[in-house]
Image (tube, rainbow over all chains, first blue to last red; front, side, top):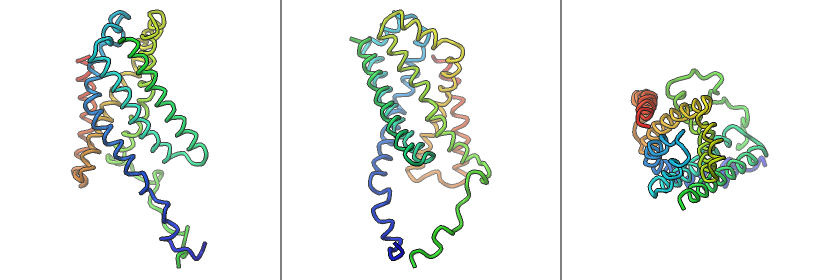
Length: 123
Length: 127
């Protein structure tokens, strides 16, 4: 080991393998959310506390349904990327892997549940 | 040569001895707000699921969503949303290579804080 140079020790260990992809994914999803989030807040906000018939009738319409599905999907994909960096920064050892896998699975589960629910309301 | 002084080099300042600044505080709040919104996001997905299930289950979700505690969570999350929104815009601006000088970074920090509260109040009036 003592005969290895620093260059050789660092070779292949860097972030240059997939780090740029992660950053690009966060950039694209953040641009999408700049559009989606204000529209979703205005569209979803008045429905909190509204009666059942009004809520189901509202999200049966194309614009609120597609907007809600898109916002839930892109938000959780953005969260999946962000929380991974949070865990990588503060958690070490096997718990890091366990937590990252858990949060990725939770994100996909939330997306699937959201799409199922809104599709069932709309169709 | 490669192993000279390995592990015995001065470290960069750690959080515990670092004086909090506007730039560092607005940075960590981007992370805190972004991840804290998970709770509100899961509540919203659950509310949609309840609406899809039927009137009885929706009544439960509606009661939870309109309770004072969850209303507090939703309003705090609305602010967190706008804070993360403004801080995200700042990040995209930084990514273009601009706004990294100290005086402009401070102006952007104040803009993020003021912008988050203005947008929160504005959207509370609109919804």
